[in-house]
Image 1 (cartoon, rainbow, N blue to C red):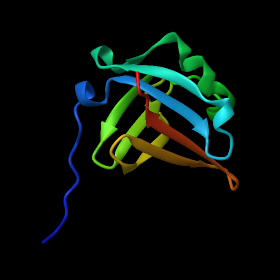
Image 2 (tube, one colour):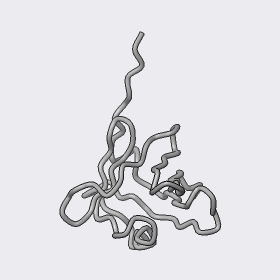
Image 3 (cartoon, rainbow, N blue to C red):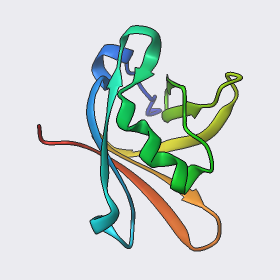
Length: 103
């Protein structure tokens, strides 16, 4: 039997998420995903250091989550590793991790 992916709703993904380079959890920052208008809390600015720009919106996909820029195009696709854990490969040596925050 085929295993299908479930598209999570914005409400299911809303809340606090912690982002950090896989090899440096001390550089973590927490950003709130807001279901209404698929927006972010102001702390999203911390992602610019890793992504090269500040995401303006987000959109769920069956296998993850797109972080999108000003013009609505995707900056990166965070791949779902398991519930509450997403990752994206940034360049040859760096992986950005996104995990559900405990608060």
